[in-house]
Image 1 (spheres, one colour):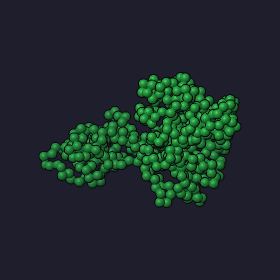
Image 2 (image 1 turned 90 degrees about the vertical axis):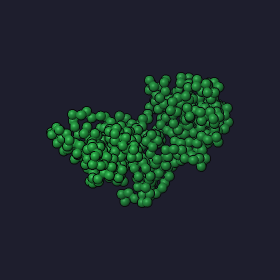
Image 3 (image 1 turned 30 degrees about the vertical axis):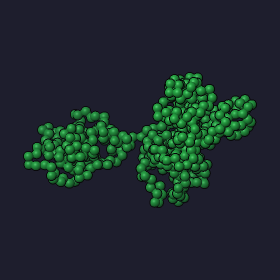
Image 4 (image 1 turned 60 degrees about the vertical axis):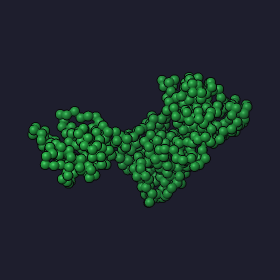
Length: 487
């Protein structure tokens, strides 16, 4: 975009005697960082030359050269011989805007805003604050905070570049040179630490706009590129790969990035691409890179839920974190004790959990998106795609989190249960053996998100969503579930 700066915006930028407003400084920072062009109209020079302070006038005109001057100064048909000089300058600037010499005009002059309204140009005339707000919405990213990973600028990791962790990446291309170039571009990374200053996993990511991922394929709008995705051998089994995907989905949702993609050697990274396919990534193209044929995996990540044209669980897989909650999908309240809630949902920030360390390092079930829950509930059947609302009992007494059923079955053999849940569950082997004395409901589900705020029992009772403390898995009506989402 080209932003035309009015004189009353230019002068505070160039006169050190005038305090610089935070919103103006931030607007210029965002515009410069994101390659928008700041321009001024020649009429602004006329205004500045009216300054009686010769030194200040000279200083302002000299520094004005850092901005782009409009090349052409067309005569303004709105001016007459009787138009005052200041009004004539304002009219010229607005007339240039009407000719689309710039995308928008930034001015604090109320009279110009009134004139713009009369000329039907008001939608392209901004105050400093509204211009800053626009660029914040367009460009300022929302970071991700999750237990067991840290988001860092890539250059912070440069001192570790010589470590053996990166050796496998250096085998196929000039990784060190690429890493330094990406650091200079301002890329960031999610990092899992095996120990202090020892990498256990890394996912380098970058926002891309209108990215051309292959010949004839250009993504519309903004996308999230996962450039490097590696988990060290010593950290395998900790669900770090799913944790990186959880971060990627959360980041894309917060910043309204509607595609996520990654490319790499399909044979070398077979298990990574298997994981990605299970979360809705699809192989779209082979991408030539450095003499080898990389494959591109792409996941559409729409900001708004698409129409329900596939079964509920397939919908979740394709459009995660969107999920179906139409009348054909059942919803259940699932009570869960605090010690298990802490392990499965370590990033939940409730009243009773805020002041203590939630996550024990030896437990990694909370890293995952794919989880398991065991119950003695009377509920005999659930369908893939049904919705789970987890109710934290004992301390919070509130609904906290949403999951979606993958499978639901009844098992009575401990070995069969262990084989089914693998590393998904919060239960230890002795606990599973104890539960397996009688038929046990085994729920495999995918964690979607936490509710925007915990929904307390007293409100559930007041709205007749529940009739009392949920002692076991409880089915609720579609209307009641929609009430919860709406509230």
